[in-house]
Image (cartoon, rainbow, N blue to C red; front, side):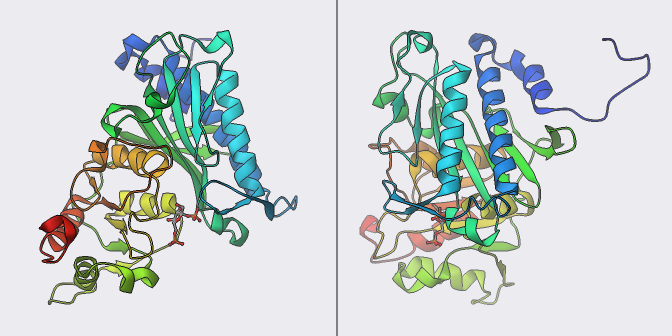
Length: 345
Ligand code: FDP
């Protein structure tokens, strides 16, 4: 139906936005559009469950451990199932790797052969915060398969971040937001519960060059290298500079989102107990690195860009320094100035 003359609606929904941008990707004939919409629908279903979690007594542990050795919460399992089902039903992805699953899943039905995408997903990040009503999130990344016309295999998932076609996250916070990039800037959509649609609310997000926040689990600091300890000291104003504010929610998506909008750095460095840090390259670091670079920021392991890693395994971990370029560079300067670091020899 035509809109009346002179009438201009002031909202743009996620499907409208994606459709409008489809012309940026003529080679995929709308498949990416379908895929992003499928993720958007699953996100709405998960958001609905997160919102009523306390009411329907869905909270609590399921009793089994995932591959990371963490206790799975019921909502993790629910979110995992929802996203996998949405991707399978959508018929555009030929496989999915989930942080909650040991192995990737290849959709083997004939229907999926020839479909060009695989998806890596962390269905519910920050799960230790579920029971205490703190923001949690979903992180997703989309790759084209390496060789078309066959079923998904491991090499399709083990591609460097530079090969990402799209990545995004959903934050279930004071409102539910979906933020994504297809390599042409970063846009954010807020779920309007009254119409059940993600509406464009943050167009072309740019991270500030520097910012007021540093985010680290300081409980680990004494297990970190001297360079990291010195950098955190610098963040606190040691050396005479202005102190930053410490903010650490303990939900990566929420900490990342705040710093993306307001400026800051999030770091999860190597520690003596976790020499590769805690966060996963495929499910967490690569997608957020793609987003932050698209927004003008930086993501590094302290030495090289996260996006340049050649992944070796699905659940690989990597140290992460991500956020405003000035602050990430500063962290790297401290790390590089450390004399006894094994990589500085
Ligand atoms: P969680 O274990 O609750 O799922 O990678 C997962 C993650 O949360 C991140 O969301 C979060 O930033 C980090 O771990 C918190 O780890 P610490 O408790 O070690 O700080």
